[in-house]
Image (tube, rainbow, N blue to C red):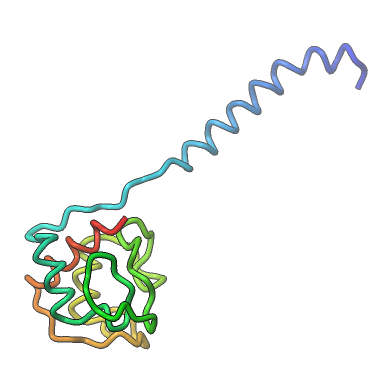
Length: 131
């Protein structure tokens, strides 16, 4: 390719590169995770998280306890893409997981604690405040 041919192609190459960058960048925006849990009260969820002693195994800001490290830190739970590493982080999935972790993710070390649907909704609402 000689210089004249290159000069004629340069605007098209630039436009193509810009289009490619725009397409790639469109998928890179920060998408907020759903943070609204129907029937959930974050403050009640915080208190329930304390009552169920979740901090015995997890680091959880704003929750009194030992802030254990047996389970993963929940510090940024509200912005994670997945629950327990593989479950899409959506309010209904969070509620289901809190109610019965082994049923949702067989093999998990997190036990089922007998959390009710209502309690799980409050706890999930609290988890989504952790960003």
